[in-house]
Length: 233
Image (tube, rainbow, N blue to C red; front, side, top):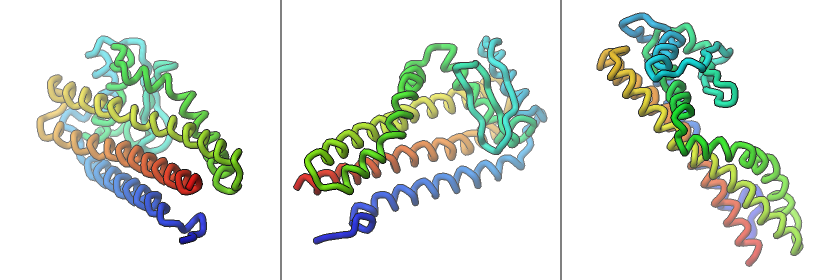
């Protein structure tokens, strides 16, 4: 049976991926918003928590800076700068402390030579290149019916696979950073037990967004492979 390109059955894989990502994003936002209204017992800000975690880990060469936006927090290993967003930097909520500690987890990974972080760093330029050229190659392969078009399609699949691989490698990096953060916050006494439980919920919800992103990318890759196989047939 013939289906228009944008309405054929495999498009359901894309829809499923979008739904998964929307649900994970909604869960993350609602969980963060809930615990962003809960003040930690000591009243320390996300910045202060980050600095304390870094000092406790013996890291003194990482700067903590403010960056605009919400949930734009990240650690830049190239410049050794930990950037905390508007919702984290000056906030005294348990959510802010949890996110700040999570980003410190990445700084600790960097300082200790955590292997998955090194692998992810090495994949960044390859994944960016793959993301940039994948869809033009795939569209050329799908829109034209010739022997050379299959070459473009296959190259597009390989390029897209590199981007998917990056998302998969990101998962253990994020899980490990959260695990480090929760362990440090609990063992250092920076947060009470119930506050640590709250940060677990925030960081678990954040982790779901990475899982959803990887799952969506895998479903998209599967769809492209199915389309390529149907073209070969």
